[in-house]
Length: 519
Ligand SMILES: [Zn+2]
Image (cartoon, rainbow, N blue to C red; front, side, top):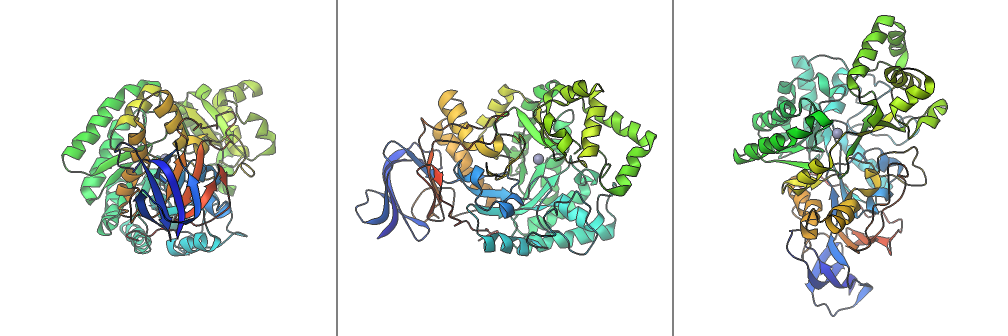
């Protein structure tokens, strides 16, 4: 007796091989048979005319704390995602509160007082496991998080002692099963680190067979230099590199994409295992204040700082350099007086308030203690398509697992739509990719990147993470103006052999596992 049989599915095996019609049987968490299946099953699903593929792997997810608050991972599972790679862009849920240093407010510890407690990677994993989670999770340790633990947000290179302490924390996270380390070299505090600091930490990751994921130091005017640094780190530490959300920001830099691609391909020819991920939109999303000096608006000290006219002028100058205010739209903020600005560009906020865009931006940051989420329309559609077609580029949402019932503001629609948007818009409507190739980028390619031998391909003996979808019906419903809408066209999602999405609806099951490297 099988647990599930999918009957007459068009099987996409994840390798980019042409689809074929078969039945697929699942038992005890594994795919046990692919072919003509006569036996009985607890549940038989008529899959005729639908595509059955390995579950989608979200190579770049920020669900670290969202999964603690929303373990059903609705916005992801409804896209067919069965595994999220978290701990990205230098920020991971753990380690934290290790007693090495007082945490500052902007650290992701908002839920620490009443929410579940954890300190290191192992205890974070246990929190996820004890609550249960609907998707599988593969965590990275964030370089920025480790650096905060050791030296806060101090804008300077690490001393040798601090570097040693960071190495100990990275080693501990790797021992506890992290799949690698991520950096956010554009963010505080990652931006204060020198290349050599990252190489030294990456060497620890390399000892464990981990991967270096990086939000590179610059994605606009210095894209190529930042990419050269990522390659230097990979070669210097001797480990694989994943360039996160590969793109060129702002029109003057769009022409740099061909050279950026050539650099990565040359590095590959020279023997560096370097790959990238991408989300299929021309807008990015980040914090309005993210590249600005640390803690300018958080805590007493920060407010003091802003009261000093010289400091204020300096920050306004830095904001001015950011420019392009008409393409930067407010996605989310907390202050009640500012709710009306969600969905407006920063330029529009300035116009409404009768002040300059920079002053408007600073005001928003002050009132909201630096926490202002933005969506930034700064990419080029041709570049998005060029990058999408590269065989070494996989899919990563750069988004979090949200629930329409609790989510707020107008966050980037990638949280809800990434995977289905590729299948619908880019495969079916615009024929940018073959269906088989698109699915490879969501399955076997990221599984390979993580070193997972038992997921990412649909064949006998593999773990039963599966997605059944209707290629004619897949639509990413989330838009920039109405983001809180689940994708449609995903009929069934199976995680570790258990059905989570049934007839297009989440059934609440939480069969996900927190994976350890070499699990
Ligand atoms: Zn990033």
